[in-house]
Every structure is written in C-alpha cells, then in structure tokens.
Image (cartoon, rainbow, N blue to C red; front, side, top):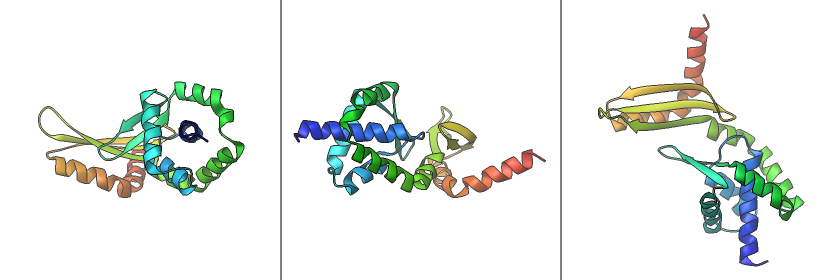
Length: 173
C-alpha cells in the first residue's frame, strides 16, 4: 500500500468514526484508536485531520482547552462515496472500539465549558451539559478575572451533575 493510499484510509477512519458518533470527538480519542490498532503514528493522524479540515469534510469547535471535531455534510457524502474502500474488518473494529469507549465518549463530550472576555474587562464562564449536540443545561457566570473563569470551567466537570440536579429539583417544586 502506498503512502497516499494509507493516508486515504486514515482519513476514511476519521470520517467513519465521526459519522458513527452523534457527539463531537477530540483528535486524541480518534488517534488513540488508530495508534492502538497499529495503523500509523500520531503525526499521520494529525495530518489526516488537517487535510480533512482544509477540505471542509470535518469541522472543529474549540473551547479554551479542547478542540472537538464533527463530520460535515460534505464529509458524510465523501464517506458514502468511498465507504467500500474501508474494509469490513476496520469498520467492525471501529464499531467495537466505540462500544467499548461509549461511556468515555459521553463523559468527554457531554460536559463543556469555555470562557470569554467581555468589552468591560470582566469574563463570562459558560458551562453546558450537552446530549446529542443539544444543550440540556447552560449557565453563564460573570466573574472579574480570567483566573476565576478558568477555575469555574475546570470545576464544571466535577460539579455539573449535582448543580443540574439541584436546579431542576428547585425549579420543579
């Protein structure tokens, strides 16, 4: 197999994986699969992601500390055209990997936080619970410093379930 054919397979693996999951994934999550199964190294996976982004077959959204990737409509169409170039064995491996990692995927993508600086100089920490790309719960908190915004974002993962439950319980009284 030539290097060009190999890169095509890596790209199809990325597209197939992103197409199978309804939530955005990190490059690291997909790279773990590709590297753990001995297909290639991290550099080649990163290159495949970059080429897919350039071709607008995948999209990237970023928070202050993580980049998340999703497949675009053009990516779905491309996958459909070249689906058979990805062997049944590789598709089955990916499906098994995703079943095994399902909890981790949900945990990584369902709890999102980011912050922005406002024109008045303070910061807003935005914290969300997301399910299947739909926001279930969001809270935006204005704070005076970037340090406070980062602290809120970092603590969101550990506190989100409890806060969500408390808010829902309080509002449904």
